[in-house]
Length: 300
Ligand SMILES: O=C(O)CCC(=O)C(=O)O
Image (tube, rainbow, N blue to C red; front, side):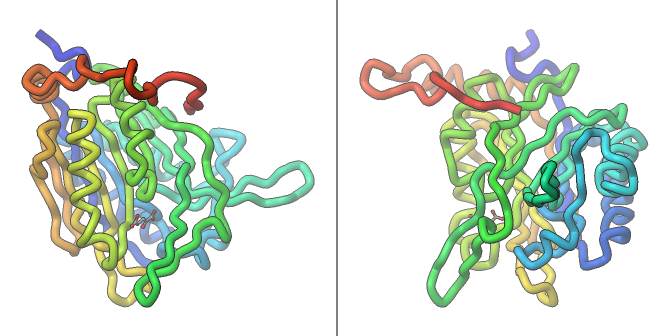
């Protein structure tokens, strides 16, 4: 019997892409790696956060592309057009990591976002997620990062229906630290929570795996975290370690820090079996605490 959340098995591949300062080269390289994953049987391919640029507040404005009105012209957004044609060529669902986006209002004022685009195997845009929780942290002597100095936060959760399979949720990096977002998505039927991300070498070793496992354990679904490869010449050193976690919260595949592709076949039966064995889905006590899945929730 098909699972109520994942209708048939799906091969998920996370590309831990090595990218640099040359956007056009990054787009070409991403295309090659997506085609490689597709050739190896992937149905859903994920790229990392800021896969077409170096990661950092100084880079957002100069790399930003205009995505609205959608679809943008190749001139406004080479990344949109490259991701769309790559998804169609590879015939895969493609979560296009994230890219810096610029939106210009009628008075010419600019707003920047950290934005993820998801395409279908026909190259059509299925969803847009603007990072909801901006990465503002200060760990003295280790790392200070303030995306909000440059970026505006998105204001919607993103659920994406993949025809023939089921529903995924897409969010970006720091968004993984907010269990509410993950829980709402899973309670609304997501079989996998997909996070393009770029944890640093400070919080990566402490929290990256743990966050992935925690979101999978709380929600009894698959979780994928897809990082850029580490580049010690870049200003930001990404942790790498792209991974996929199963509904029992086991890390089933994990990369090291260099460029690679990690893949796993997701199976709805594993979700059903986990939820049957540990039935937290039917044991919640909304008479004792509130239901996060109720009330005003904004979706893409
Ligand atoms: O939460 C963290 O420690 C890292 C988050 C991050 O790197 C990001 O949001 O891009």
